[in-house]
Image (cartoon, rainbow, N blue to C red; front, side, top):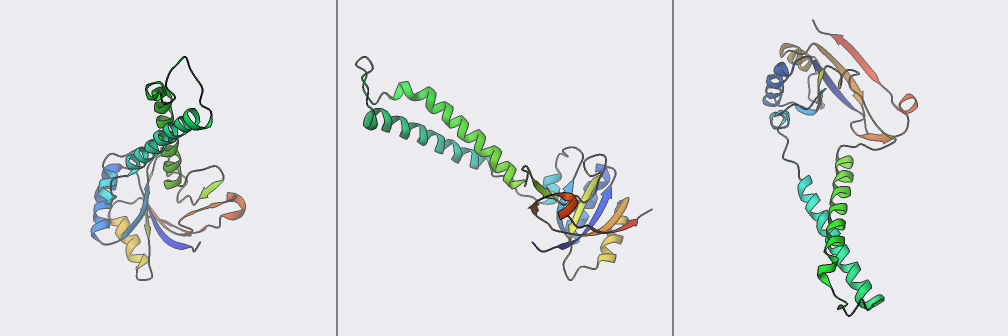
Length: 195
């Protein structure tokens, strides 16, 4: 994966972060991500992110579970291995409702967890670039992706004028990779202390 250049601005208060996010979007800069120590209500709206479609995926997984349960039970008890349970019909749908419900919930829950982990790029042995060591501790870290037309010095000044306590430039892979941090991750970091 190709490496990209990012300008990283660190904020120490969410009340300073919100106006900076809005001004950054209005200025036309592309926000790669924002890392916060706790969930910040309304930050996704301020970043312009669309609503998640995870609930739609959960419904599709639930339909797969329902159809798997009904299809498997009906095929097993009517075609493959029909048994006589005290004169009950082979296609006894009311008796299958508990199993159908359980498989519906199981498929939906497991599918949503796996989809969430894939979308957030979280899994064992999956590594991502850490833009700041205090990103999930006590700092709000805004990462802005630069292009060939971006004036990096102007962007650093823009972030520091909007309340960033620390601004630096990093070159990193924007995605994730398999491996170890100590051998695979190459950091090129230019630290700039902003007063």
